[in-house]
Length: 295
Image (cartoon, rainbow, N blue to C red; front, side):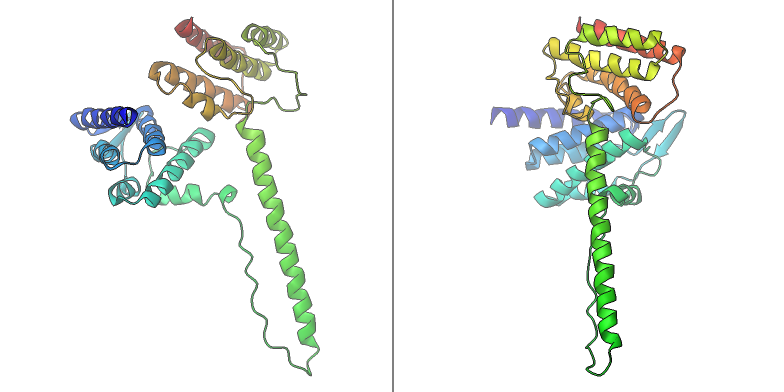
C-alpha cells in the first residue's frame, strides 16, 4: 500500500511538473517519458496513476528534434489512457515497448509518430505470421476425376505454406536470441572475461591490433561488469541490453550516460557501423565518464 501511494505521488508530481512547462519537449525527454509510462503501467494501473499519466501526456504537443519542432499525434496513447479498460492499458504497454525497441534497433523518430507509425511497427514481418486458412473444396463430382487431382494439389500447397510459416517463426526466434543478448558472435562459452579489468585488457589488445569493433564490445562488457561489481546492477549475459538498463532506472543521470554507451555498442556490434581509431577514442572517453560517475 505504501509503495502504491509513493508511485501515485511520483506520477502525479511528474505530470504536474510537465504540465506546468512548455508544451514542447526535447527528443530524449520524449522517449524517456514513453519508457517511464511503460514501466508505470507494468507496476500499477490504478485510476489515480493512469490519470496522472494522461495529464502528463496532455501537455505535450510537439517535440524538439535538432533545430526543428515536430508536432506529434498522441491519440493512440491518449485513448487507452482515458478508457479505464485494463485490457487496453495492457495492449498500450506492449505497443509502447514495441516502439521503444524499434527506436533503439532501427532509429525510428518522432516525425510521424501516430496510429500510422504504430501500425507500421506492429506490421513488421518479425511480428506477423501467415495464418493458414484452408479454402473449402467444392463438392467432388463422382464422374469427374479432375476433382481428385485438385484436392491433392491443394493439400500440397497447404503443406508448403505450413513449412514456410514454421521456418519464418523459427528464424524470428533465432534472430531475437542472437540480437538481443550481449553474447559475442562465434565466441565459445567461457571466452568472455569475468572481471571489468579483464575486459579492459582485452579491449586494449583488440585496439592495438586495430580490431576496434571487438574493442568496443569488450569496453561495453567491462562497463556492465563494473556496474555489477559496484552493486548497481546484476550482470547476466542472457539478459538484453534493455533489461540491464531497467535495473538503474532509479538513477536518471547514470541511466542517460549508460543509454548512450549501449546505443553506440549496438550500432557498432549489430549494425556494423564503420569505426576507426578516432571513433574508438571518443567511445573510450564516454566509458571513462561513466566510470568516474560510479567511482
